[in-house]
Length: 206
Ligand SMILES: Nc1nc2c(c(=O)[nH]1)N[C@H]1C(S)=C(S)[C@@H](COP(=O)(O)O)O[C@H]1N2
Ligand SMILES: [Mo]
Image (cartoon, rainbow, N blue to C red; front, side):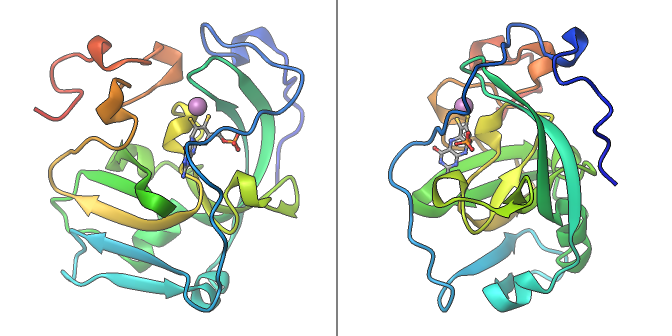
């Protein structure tokens, strides 16, 4: 069950430097893609345990076990949206059904049009990381990532890739779209890991 007892404006729930805006911005780079259920698939590829990619058609993806998570959402541009109820398939479920090779320590999450974000396997495997299909009890709107978006709520929101099409298990770390453009490889909002110049040795690819 979802815990709604926490006060969304409770001071210590907001990471440093963040504020709660009035509205709810929609932010992304590029166009909103059209969902075509007949040809859509989610691929889990790269360093899988079997060495083969796993493909989920929309029909197959829709039959996976589902879960709901209540989580705050922190954009690096400093707004935070508190108390979002996301439903979908947990990353842990995907890891079970499409297991990675033991050497895979990193994950690239790919959206339509080549948008990508890399996360550590340990962040991907967190219990609240989701492949979400619903927000607050309704299917995602097209501009929020319909039909499926990643939600990695404990990291800055650029890691929460909209319109997800692939999950790539990686043995070596690699930078995604914003990580290549000066943003922090790990992106923990509680440590204000906003920019790549803040990275400590070992926090990014060599
Ligand atoms: N595919 C894709 N996903 C994306 C982005 C993007 O440009 N493309 N922008 C990210 C950023 S920077 C933020 S803050 C959130 C915004 O999510 P929202 O539009 O639901 O608020 O989506 C993230 N996911
Ligand atoms: Mo963002």
